[in-house]
Image 1: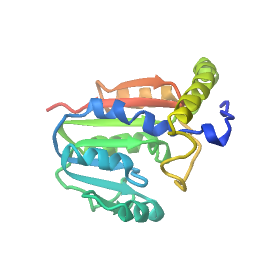
Image 2 (image 1 turned 45 degrees about the vertical axis):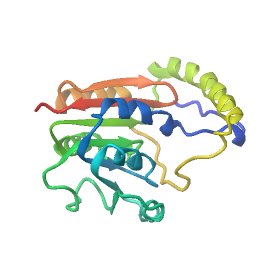
Image 3 (image 1 turned 180 degrees about the vertical axis):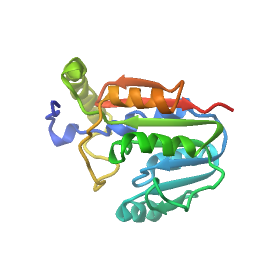
Length: 209
């Protein structure tokens, strides 16, 4: 069940970007190496580059990687599937992030794979899109008016009416927040999964040193 927000195009705004600050707060101020999974046009990967000595951005969409490369910067762009790519750092990363990309992969294998890419002492930070069930309808009831208010505020600031990753491949989620919490409990002990407004959840896991 999902209540789709119906706003005028001029009031649309980027829900993913809204949670960039949340992920950055979960990460160290300085890192040797970071990986952004499903990087799209590279907006968040470039933010990681301000903190990390080296950043890899990987995406299965050749079109997205081409757009990311066209923007330039110091990020190494990788066209491939994180589930089987060999073109990643063999000794792992201090931070692995994924924004609205986890639902494009099989949940448990993907969490296991992302967790394996995190170095001891490193962090996995995810913003995901859940499938909404009847239990989460109260979140929808809050998110809908809040979404409209945010759209109006951002439009007044000149920051609404466009998306960062136009053309990004889209897929409806099939896993709920409860599914993610259960998988994380089994595969990433001590991971914290929280539901948020604007049709997102977060998963933060600090790998034991």
